[in-house]
Length: 120
Image: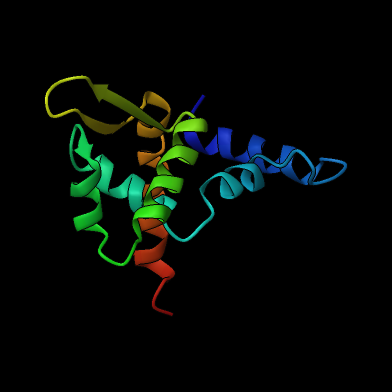
């Protein structure tokens, strides 16, 4: 099925839903809502993995508590993977899961839309 036909089916399905309770767009936006979630995902998409302090340095206005909370939340949603290394000294690395990486084409489309309409 080509992209245009899939888009038409999606829009038709969306318009014919009895209510917006199960709207996939709303569910996705709620999952990504929050001041820091998209920034954390953006930073993690640039590297295979990042340590906490690397992320903190790349997002300087975020507090340690908020970064911890955001990472835990994204981990619970299956978007971020947390790997703990029991070495001396111990450390933790964060990376995007397959589910998280599957968001990158969505972000690309949003960026395309923003380039076209964002400054108007």
